Image (cartoon, rainbow, N blue to C red; front, side):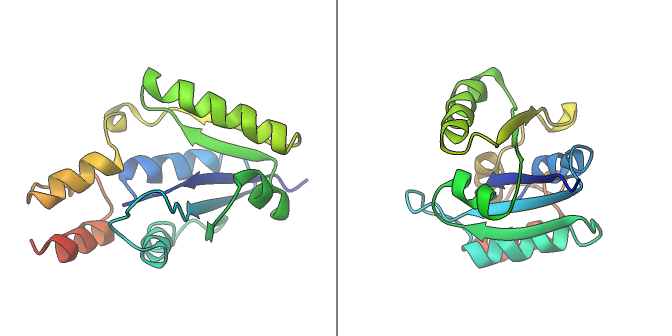
Length: 160
């Protein structure tokens, strides 16, 4: 059996927390699809192709991980990819309520799809894309929070 997991998100930008969860996904599935969402409701810092390229650099040495973008319903994307598991990260209790609602809706739309919640490594629980963007925008050091390629992209974007 080839178990496929999808780890969806905006990844704007990808962080060490995302990287940690991608590695953890590999313990649950034979193949992991990191799915970059095209969210029309958000104004992203990086375009979808830029985020895909950054993630491809991050997972370069993870042979069972692929990066794709998607638009529309995650439940449909998962069905099209024959995925049976969605992996979502939970950093704090506040994440749970929203993520539970999404998991239940995805199950309603695709009953074969299970959602698994993973906690990041202890030292990464506070890391979010929003915080990384803010620190980088004001010239702060994000080198411990992101892959070097992401750090370079942030420096280029903010001119620091």
